[in-house]
Structures are given as C-alpha cells and as structure tokens.
Image 1: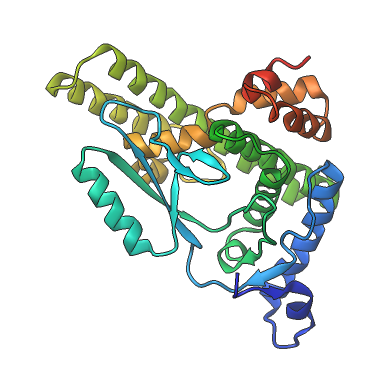
Image 2: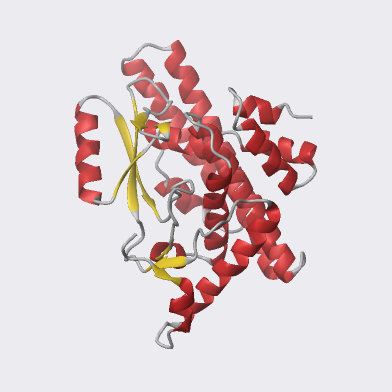
Length: 308
C-alpha cells in the first residue's frame, strides 16, 4: 500500500511509458463500466503500485489426505477461507513443505491482484498490467464483485460469483466499447468459452476423484485409480477444441494434484449454476442485485440458484 501512487499523477507524468499509460486509461473505462453494472466501485483502483514480477502474493491451498475439499484457514473479519496468501514466496514454499510433511497435498499459485473488500483503497498493480487487455478487464471486474458481494464463510460462493461476473462483464465491456462484431469482443467470447470448457473438464475430474475417495480406502489400489483418472483428464484436455490456448501444451503443464483441483473448484466449480441464474435474472445488473441479497442469507448459493 505504501507503493501506491494516484493514477492521475502517473498519467500526468510525461515519463510514464506509453503501455502503462494505455492500460491505466483502460482502468478508468472499466471502473465506469463496472459502476453501470451495479458494482460498488468507490475509490478502488484509482492508484497504481508498480510491483515487480508476476504476483503480489503467493496463495497456498491445501487438502487433507483422501479429501478434495480445501483445508480452511481462519482470519479475523473475513472468517474461513480456502487459501492463505504470502508476500514472501519462499515462506509460502516453506509452509507448503511443512504441510506436505504432515500429509497434506498443497498447491501454490501466483496472485496478481486482491480485494480488501472495501476496507482499503486497493491499487492497480504492476502484474495486473502485464497480461492481456482482457485479463486486466476481467480481473478488475472480478475484484470489484468482491467489494460488492461478500458472504462470510462462503468462499465457493464469493469466488464463484466473482469469476462468473468477471467473465461475463469482460465480454460485455468489449462489446459495449468496440461493438459485438469487433475482433476484441469475439476474442473475449472465445477466451471465456475456452476457459469454461477447460473448467468443466477439470470439474469432471474433481468429481471422479471425490467419488473415488468416498468409495475406496487409502492404499495402492486407490492410488492407481487416482493416477488413471489424471491420465484420462490430461487426454481429455489435450483433445479439447480450444481456439485461444494450445490444448496439448495445457494438458502437459496443468497441475492436477488434489489441492490444485480444490482451488479450481472454488473458483469455477459452479459456473453452470451462475449461467442458469443469469438467464433467469435476464441481465447482469439484476444478477448482481440478486447475488447481493443472497449473500445475506444462510445459504447464498442455493438462494441465488433457485431465485425465479
């Protein structure tokens, strides 16, 4: 937070590189668009932190042996969440090794952005600017959903609705800015379509592993069956007809350990339900209003999914 500089000052500085200037101007456009969707924009992302590297924090996710649900960490104010973030990457790796020594499976991932849920004025970060334009748009909308919709101890709901609205909002942003037939809008739709096909494949694998763990006791037989499920999943990913990613390369590189599957499930396991909820809502602003209302109930996912 000490690294923040108001974006207006960065834009006024003639020494600001053109690529940085263009992306920060885009941030202002996305904030305006997000406000029209009904997201609580406030003063979020009006400053810039020129952070180095590909991440602000490293997130640690863990699962217990024979489980595919994430271990929950507890923090004041925000409650139980299925991840723990570290500014120090080496400390994250050390804690992961310690949890693995205790029998946990772990997954580490780079996090380029975050939301403090409105407690502080979150900055745009260097890592956010270094990806594709579509990544920046989707991430900003995703994080602004967190400021707008938050249910305590319901990370699956919080991350699921943010992921879905981030994707849909990104598509609608480019359609509104450039036209529905524009190359940028077409690519936005293709990116989301590919992401959802990949997520569905991973969710299928996660379901198979979960059923295996429920039906088969720990031992060599279960380990062999788990390995076969992973082999099949990599084959399925390799055969996907993706237009924005290299499917065979993704199949080789994707992490399919239990903890990484658990992380994937937190963010994308329920996308089909949110898609159905959007159809019933009729438009994205109405879905966001319903999500805000659902977050105040005891079962936000079911409340939103069953809304008429």
